[in-house]
Amino acid sequence: MARKKVTVLGATGSIGCSTVDLLNHHSDSFQVVALTGGSNVQDLVQKSLLLKPQLAVIKDSRLYKDLKEGLSGENIQVAAGDAAIVEAAEMPTDTIVSSILGTAGLLPTLAAIKQGTTVALANKESLVAAGSLMTAAVKEYGATLLPVDSEHSAIFQCFENHNRKSVETIILTASGGMFLNKQLHELSEITPEQATKHPNWNMGAKITVDSATLVNKGLELIEAHYLFDIPEPQIDVVIHPQSIIHSMVTYHDGSVLAQLGTPDMRTPIAYSLAWPNRITTPVKRLSLAEIGSLTFFPVDLERFPALRLARQALLEGRELVFNAANEIAVEAFLKSQITFLNIVDVIEEMLERTQFTRPTTLEDVLEQDRLVRRETKECLAKRGESS
Ligand code: NAD
Ligand code: MG
Image 1 (cartoon, rainbow, N blue to C red):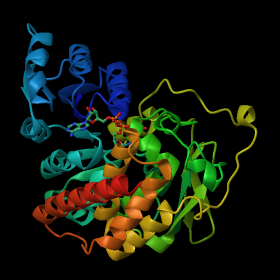
Image 2 (cartoon, rainbow, N blue to C red):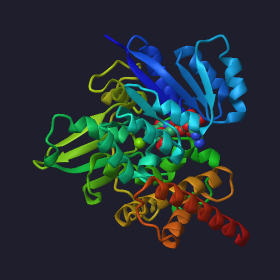
Image 3 (cartoon, rainbow, N blue to C red):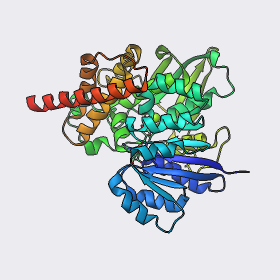
């Protein structure tokens, strides 16, 4: 059988590394078309030497020479810059893994969708910022959008072979992040070092902070709305600290279907790569006897208001504001410019201050995103002056 052609956007990140690991394990089944990276050129070189793509692209143009040197003598084209990443996404493939961080992934993901191919989407921020636009493009170009996020992969797996009309609710599970049991006053003391360590999942820095603030669950609620066309009131969230049940679907006969597994992103990535089939993974197998008990709690919206703000943003058509303000606030927190609790304060302030409603064209998305980022930076600068 012909090997499936795959491109990985963001191959040097956390999702990218897990994807490369799977592609390497299954080199008989997959052929790599293009790999892209942001600034970690040595890592991109190593992964390219391993998987032998047709093209390797680094975002940072200053690193073009290093990439070229690292791959000299190989039959691999090299390129650099944002436009080259979009061109990589335009190269014909069977599946494109979209795992660039943040709304920087939007244009390449849209280019992938316009190929009418299968897009395995990890880059949730793009779908949150431009959900209507992206889902319309998926329909227009006949693309298939598959979830990589573990919760959405779980829901997608629980949907299979079922009549979607009989779905009553979907239930996203949330680990609750690092600080689930901390009191509000303790949350203000949290450092970037503490917030970038997740108890269950090994992920990039930004999403680990998003998990700790519960902004990640807010982004995922919006992601679920767009991926599955489910209204906000039918999306529930429950805290499940062990991250064993990855999410659930309730049907109108009272049945609840769940997908379980050890917390390892290689399982949902493998599912999106092999869909509609499955491939083997080296993931540790689940032993419920070893785990003993699974626990569940409601979300405490007093300590973690991010989920309430995400619901509000979705209902008001202002998801882009929620996302862009968070991206800037998390960057500032990681540089120790604001406190952990300030992140969600800043999102709330930006939702109050900005009047934007859901953008309908790509130009509107890019313009709103630019303006919200600028205003968030101004808001952070003012906070800095008054503290
Ligand atoms: P990461 O920071 O580890 O990796 C991000 C990748 O994107 C890297 O290859 C980086 O070089 C590249 N990149 C960053 N900025 C870029 C830019 N401006 N232009 C081009 N490339 C750029 O992040 P991650 O944790 O792998 O997350 C990637 C995406 O997957 C995010 O949208 C995240 O929300 C989502 N996601 C991650 C996990 C996880 O376990 N890490 C789980 C679910 C969803
Ligand atoms: Mg997730």
